[in-house]
Length: 415
Ligand code: CTP
Image 1 (tube, rainbow, N blue to C red):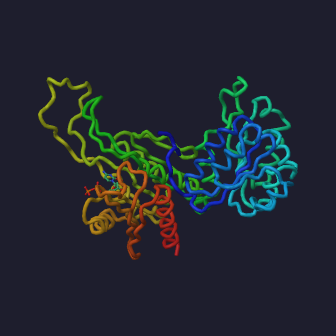
Image 2: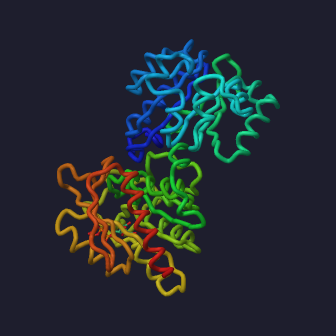
C-alpha cells in the first residue's frame, strides 16, 4: 500500500472546482477526481473544448454527479449554474491536467474558455497539475508562465513527474499520480497553524529480533502515526517521523527515520526531541525483547523450548523523564490501546508517564478500529479538560482532532 491510496477523510463538505484541459492525461485526472469524491468532496467540473476530445463530458458528469461546464456562452448551461458559479462556490480550484496552452492563458489572465474563466473568477487557492511533453515543459516560455503564476502566491503546482511520456519521450511532463494530487490539495487547504513548530511522531510496530530472521512484533500498520505526521506537515510543522517497519511510503516533506527495534526507536526519539514543540508517541512498541540475540539463524533442531524475555525501554516514558524539567518542554502525547476500563487505564498512563494528552482507543471491540483499521474511534484525555469522545472517523480526521487539541495545549502553556 502506498501513501494516500486509502480513504482518509478530511474533504467532507469541501467544494472543489475541477478544470480539465486537453491532454491524454485527462483520463488519469478522472481517477484523481474520483478520489476527491470518495473523500467526501463535492466536485464540479469545467472542460476546455480540447479536453472534451479526450474524455466525454458524460464521463466527468457521471463522476461528479453534476452538470459539466463546457461552453460559457451556451444559454442552457448558463441557466444551469451560471459561468461564474463554479468559481464562486469553490474552496479550491484544481486544474488537472494543465496543458502548456492553459498555463499560458492563465498566466496572462485570459478568460476565453470554461477553465480559464473559472480560474480567473475564483478567490480561493488554485492547484495546477501540469502534463505535457518534456520539451514543451522545458521550453522557456512555459517555464516563464509557470513562474508568473507561482509569483501570484495563490497558484500551487504539483508535478509534473518524470518518466515515460505518452509520445515515447522520457523526462518531466507526466501528470503526477492521482493520490499525489489529493495529497497536494490537502496541503493547500490545511490551516498553517503549526508553522514554526517542530513535531516528532513515532509510528508503526517495532521488531525485536531473536536471530537474523525471527522477531517478536505486533500487527500495527503505522497508519495512525503516518496520518499524524502528514497532518502536522500539511499544517506547516517541521515533522520528524520515527517509524518502525511498515508498508507505508515515507511521506514527502517529512524527515522519516526508519528504525527496527525499541532500542533504536528510543535513540532516534531522544535525538529528534531536541527543540521539539510536541512529541506524539503513536508507535506500538513491543514491550519485551528476547534476552539474547543470536548472530546466526537458529536451526530448528537447536530451537529452545522457551524464550527468555527482558523489557524493552519505554520510549515515551524515557522522553518524558528527559524533557520534563526543561523550561520549554514539548507537549507529550501518548496512545493507550485498551480492551477494558478504557478511561481509567488511559488516565493512569497520563499520570504515570506525566503526559499532557492521552489518546485512548478501545481495541478488540467490533467496529472500533484499532490495529490496522482504517478508521478509529478514540477518547482524548488530558488534565483539567473534560474527556472528548471522537466518534468513528477516518484516521486523518482523528489526526487533525489530536493536533487541534495539541494546539490548545500550546496556548495553555503560553498563557
Ligand atoms: N510506548 C513507548 N514505548 C514502549 C511502550 C509504549 O513509547 N516501550 C508508548 C506508546 O507509543 C503509547 C504509549 O506508550 O503512546 C502506550 O503506553 P503503554 O503503557 O505501553 O500501553 P500498553 O502497551 O497498552 O501497556 P499496558 O500493557 O500496560 O496497557
